[in-house]
Image 1 (tube, rainbow, N blue to C red):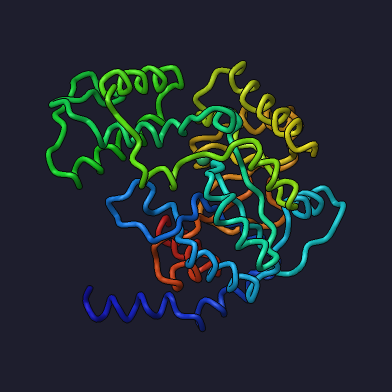
Image 2: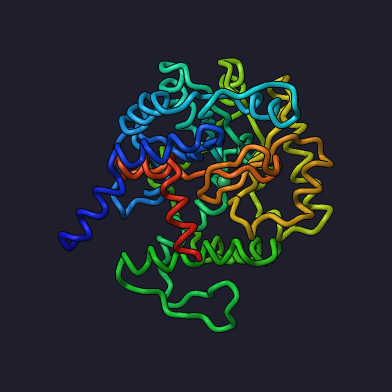
Length: 343
Ligand SMILES: [Zn+2]
């Protein structure tokens, strides 16, 4: 990094500048989206490297965040939107997507220790069977690819599988991203193709901790500990790629299953993947019709209170990054810079 660039990065990450930006956002809701919390920091060769946070970094973040924010529940956010309650200044909501088992074993004890509420969004189809989320299984199977050539979604010709691990990881990532942009039935066909071609594949123990989903006893226990459980659909498809009947099923079946398990209303959903293209007006309308009261996306912005409660902005938590990166994301500086970059 050049010296000038380093000075700039340090300045942008500094506590003073971010604190100043933060103070101008008292009436903005900050929602953080976490995925996994793992025992040790991971290396970049690790699957889910960037979407996980080590337990010690997570504890540091959860201890620090209440100094700038007042943590609130999803119910408080819903009540505010429905005109039934107020929110404190600088409200912060912690959310977890996918329902990995480490949310129960590692994240929940830390949240309890600091008295910080959180909502866990789970995909119900993965909580009952010993199944892995489709994109985790897909990427790990791809990394075990032994064939010379591979078909790539959306392309008619196969391409050669690279020899170098870094290039393999990049291609596996590209394929898994491509799978999120094709119709759901094509995605299912592609996943079957990869399964057929990697029959001898075994999940490494080292990956198990990062990607194994919770079971229903663990979800129920989180709910009994006072945490909120939201829906992340049944099968984690990209909702905008579904036909209307499948869309209804994903929204309604997951909601009723979670209510059956927890005995509490399931009023919030995090749309799988959560990027703007993954949600359509039809998805939002069906979500409301299914009886949800809040919907969460991931667009790396703070949520302007008064905005659409079915499109609540979230920021990805920063895993494997210095504290200044997290500061920039939650202060509003990050989304401000993105705004000017897009212009
Ligand atoms: Zn997800």
